Amino acid sequence: MAVPVPGRVAEALRRSTVVVRTGSGRGAGGGSGVMLASDRVVTNAHVVREGKVAVESWEGKTVSGTVVRTDQFRDLALLSVPGMSAPPAQLGDSDALRAGTPVIAVGNPFGFTGAVSTGIVHASGGSSADGAGGAFFGQRWIHADVRLAPGNSGGPLADLQGLVIGINTMVMAGGLALAVPSRSVQSFLARTGQRPSLGVTLRPVALPDGRMGLLILELETGGAADRASLLPGDVLVAANETRFRFVDDLQSALDEAPRGLLKVEFVRGGEKRPRHVAVQLARERVTTAA
Image (cartoon, rainbow, N blue to C red; front, top):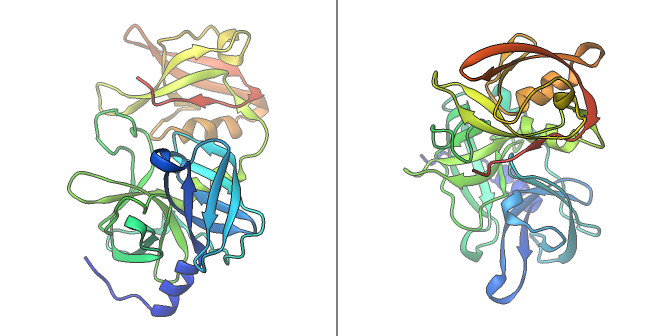
């Protein structure tokens, strides 16, 4: 659904949107990104590889960029782009979105720089792209009917004030676009150093009741979960009496754990059990691998 957009808003957003290129020759790839701070670009993790990338501004200036860090589950990457002169955009509040909110998507599909597409939000906060516990289950999404194509990935989704409320990521069957909400982007940008951790590798799974759980794939020897006698195959379902809806609910509970003690609920052998865990500082590992 096309909606009228103030020209100045669209133009400002185009100037904050960049082209991200990786590789060369047959191995070349790329997409879009958005300047959110001086010398910093946010894009999708699937757009970039570790190491060097080339980033081109709206005015055609190309600089060499470096991948600072990625979050493969949220599909986000932060790039350092010294010397890039594109004006930074501002993040909005994706939690304030409602169905029917008009939105703007900017990107570089099929080589067209700064292409603009408009539409409306269909839903916000959905946890699954496929509804069946697949690769994107347990993630927060904005669903919008903006038109995306190859090259749009990593570009901004914004409201009519030009505030970035999401990072465009993929298109679902039926044509609805999925964007990572700005609240998830803010959490990603704020993450520095070590945080409270259970010392586990997790994968989100769909439970028989349709809710989400976090399957423990591996435990760090001597880590918090190991010392609390959790085991691979256990499925975490809640922390501090609150059921998980999204993967990042666990990290939020860890960050807020009083005195570093977290009460988790998990399922083992079909039986739900409680356990208190003394958390440690580390980085939690979440994978979407089967």
